[in-house]
Image 1 (cartoon, rainbow, N blue to C red):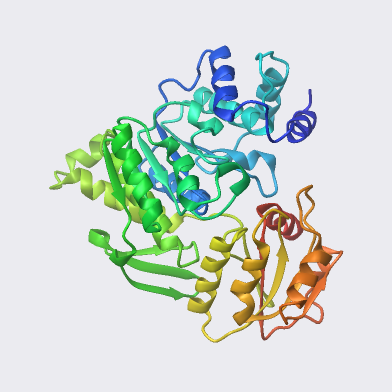
Image 2: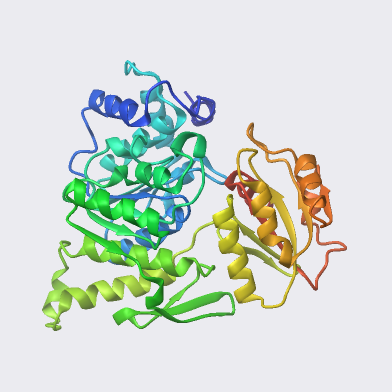
Length: 432
């Protein structure tokens, strides 16, 4: 099979299976001789922020000299974005070779697209002898395919909100209980700040599972947060001022979660002889701090509060639910106080799109709506009608290019495109 044929076949396999993902993947891995055994894992679950935490962690561990495999989803432009080592995508030949092997093997179950991608990633990370593997859940945690991989050294749970309620539960506590499924005996748990009822679920489950420790991020520890010239910075504990290229005030907490997780992971990592020979007091903590400062600054994450064009201004963000949009709004109001924006929006029909729109009404000049090229997409006309009913101008657009044409564009007000990551991927592909 060619690379293109493998990707096309995997992309067109159903998204949901007859069995839980954790069951399917466990059977696949067992048939392959359990290639995941011996891997040092960091497991990440949550509603918003998983990708950002993964990106921060990868760069921090890279700064420590580790070879870091990262499995994320979905991809924005290229299928290979899902499987990366030290920021570089898996080679096409490896996708072709491993994909052909998996697609032609009988596992006794019917794997989904996500199962194939995950197992391909694990085989690749094993071949490449990664020192650390970061796994981002696809949906939930307890029954997610990634939960079959083993016991992680660190589990990170990002912000929890209402999403995928038909599968995960109708209340925040029910959703949190599913996410808490990644907490295992002996694992160190890092949890971002949550609603009280959500945090109580995680603390209870961590104690019940026998987790080694549970760290909760406190946003009150962030000080002197500022934005200047396309970068932001904040003061955090003993690290002092940390600069970052990632934008969004919510990224302070994502960075902090990655920092705590990296501290835990690197405490048992062997330091190079050159560091030890320096005779620095508290050498390990000094080394970890240097890795953290460098890694946080180097981190980039495509499609998240990303400025694609400065004149006329265009920012894209994968805010695909009301929690994400609330974070987007807060960041825009912080970075550009008093301004109003042109919004371009494309979302899935099963999202809380009315609440997403209402979040932005106070800072919206108008909206353009687009139908995302995906079977679950909300039709642009229906979205535009919904927005107009709320008293704001909205136009549905057939050709995405017209939304970002420079000719005749408003150079005074900024444009912000947001919604489904599939939609953000279409924009990224357009600009490439």
